[in-house]
Length: 157
Image (tube, rainbow, N blue to C red; front, side, top):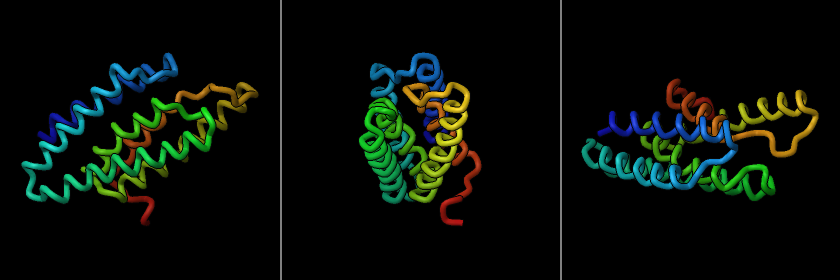
């Protein structure tokens, strides 16, 4: 079941990244079902694993931490980070939590912030403005994938 979850996660995050990069929108008609599907798949994977309770708690911890962090960031940024990005965090969080717990989730957040800062700086230098230019979804996906693929807990090192 974990393999199905991974394949779905790759498909959904790739599709949503391309949508966001192209339109600067993360449509609810794709985002909300993807969030629900990844949760069902990962809960099922958790229930057939040896560490049922731990894996279930980890995936929900990942979801809550990512969602709350990006919700606060959206409020602080006053519209620079959209509601779609906050909901995307609820898609990325369960996989991060399931695979690596809170440390992998925190690592992904750190990578996303670093990548986002670099990308925003490059964009501002290139265009001489900071108004609504950055589709942040792809940055969030790449940062999450980097954390998942490396498996390194950079935050605690």
